[in-house]
Image (cartoon, rainbow, N blue to C red; front, side, top):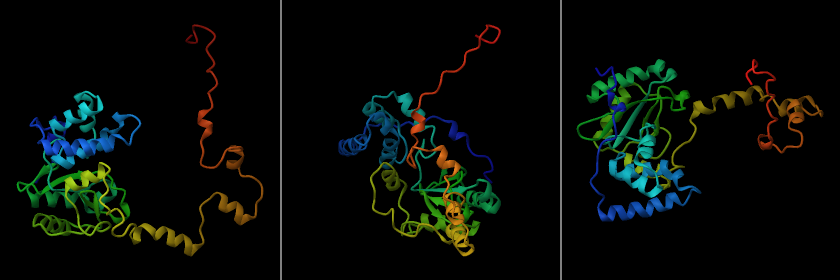
Length: 281
């Protein structure tokens, strides 16, 4: 069993100072120029550029850190600080498929912990470790915002809903064998980690609308509300009661258009200063 996660998440980035081949560097520069051009301040392009590095190297390499730092006029420490803060950026070679098991509260009590433990034993790896064939990296994930389909797994950020230990093991076996695998809600086949990293860098692959979006469980509340004639509190209540008087919310926002927050631009009144030193002056 691999009950305890390795301390790898505390380690530095995996070193890789080998320069990029000329053709790879030329394409990387061309892609990076498109990414940087989207932002008024070029340093704001760091997050997508780190995904771009992963689409080439499979993780955030030392040479990738230097590339970003040089391009964005940042220090390597600043780039590394960001790359080591977010778990989507990998510090060491990642598998072709990043398999995440949600073990947050609802998924955990619905079987997420057991799924992770059995997958860990089945694959012979623990959290944030990769199989010897380089196909699967396994990790525990925090909430995937899919509680209505718990327990949930994700493969390269595509959903696999209502999983069991058995379906989870079957899934990774199919991925390792090279079989095309379709997600529950998404494209007809899961793409590689490098492919998805390029999409996250801002280069669409045209698959965003492929497959279903919301599953039956996601719209169950809406269906029930329609059957019962329920409405959310607010303007709908006033209309149903035939009220023509302005609501408290309307009065509070008098003179402001809906959806605007101009009041945040109003200067605050100066704080009242204490009158004596004893009061803290």
